[in-house]
Image (tube, rainbow, N blue to C red; front, side, top):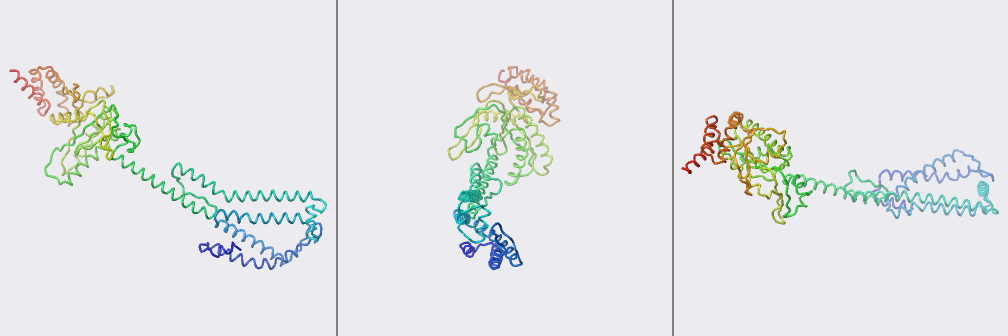
Length: 481
């Protein structure tokens, strides 16, 4: 009765359940009416049962079978619509009632005197004088009852095991597929809650991934590797790491500028060239440490990768210039150093900035000034050549001595590979003469140096470096006289 009242009060009952309930009630009535015909068709003879079915008894069997089937379906739907404690109680009740009634009938079977009782007693070999068989049947029924009760608990409590496994998986992170538990209605709420938790995991994981992607746009992942950290949250103020690497200062200078650009045009103009350079830097294993308006500071793990990248950038800028019809052309000016550099975190607790904190930036600025003065595309110090593989070949020439920020004297060179073809041919043609002039100048023999530089200028009048040396030689000689 409770089941029917519960169904009646349930506003969320499925339409299929309502139809089954109506059919069950309609079939239950003839099942009761024809029920007596079924018992009339079963005739006990003391040793067994004889079957004498007619139309009414067959109809009664069909109606009872259908009502039993529909009743079982409705009972299971009723069980699954209850909380777990009530589901266990109501699912166990029929088993307990059946067990109790069966034990009572087995115990009292020998005392009944009607034909049906005597026939069942004969089939089960139960008599008033033989209690042994009665006990055996009672034990058998008890064992069946325990097994059925155990299976009932396993089926009803199976979702608990699923919840346990799902919670364990959620403890390790998000679950890819949709969480399904099943079982009684109470687990629908649990399933919904776990799916919400899983969705929150996915959203937070996506947020973290997006944050990581966005943070790498500001702080490249190679920088974290240099510092031995995995994310920006692990960066510590004042932490510093010494690494041997190639540091490159890249400047973009305008070759021609027939008209003034607006602020917006200038912004897009600079970005258009930065968008060409930046992917090339990443392609050759480097990362950008900082942007300097129309300049970039990049770091590479090796000398060879830095030079390969510079040559690739020069070719890319040349192609980009040819594509420009109205905007100014751009020339690439690069200063390149190789050696020990310090990476660290500067700023305050609420504002951390990872960057190069060593003196290499001062050396790069000096090299860039030299490159600007002599009109060279790429200049670099001797450690860059020393760190190259023996098989690495490219055209360069000696420019002279260079004193670093730490007062160490080294040599600087000009990369001829990035020079325009016509100019590169003239530089290569006068390379030996130019370098002799540089060596004589370094040794204070200004007259010989002046002679060599004058010879270079006769072949290549556009060689600004030779012109600078020529003027310096004249200045030195005038000071000596």
